[in-house]
Length: 113
Length: 115
Image 1 (cartoon, chains in turn green, blue):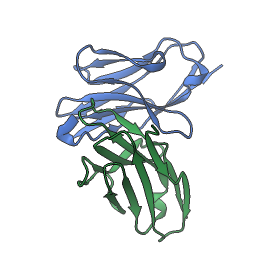
Image 2: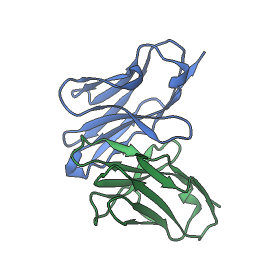
Image 3: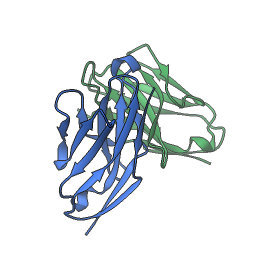
């Protein structure tokens, strides 16, 4: 049982390049989330998926798109990366009716030059 | 809408001293409250949570927190800290299913335990 996994662990992009961050969970959780973490700002929600087939915007969705590929996988795409998207990205999942606890992956560090 | 304020960005303490990390929240609905810990270069790990019932909540690694509805606070405490407690701590709130179980985080408090 690996929990929540994220790939890649680290990535360097040039401005304007695109990439997809991958997230998978093996806990049969319904809900999945993408956050970004910036110094002094805590974690901010980018997008979330309450269940397979649904996605909703969070606090900072601009410049990102998501895909809930199936119950296990939730990907985050940057179509045209900008230096302001340099951050650490965390994926999380939550079990159905499970007292609201979210379980986090190890994170992806992204540097946009 | 909901928000969280962690009143201290950095808390330095000596080993074996007590510590309190302060967290205030605001919300228009009933809330669930959480404390997460992040060790260097790692993801977030749940320390403890308040859902309902007893206002004093005990978590892992000897931490506890008290929910105070009248003061809208959820402060984290430990009576005696260890070097290994050095980490960043995040307070978070959610309004539950009515808000998609979206977590709103505070800015974080860096706890540094010195020998």
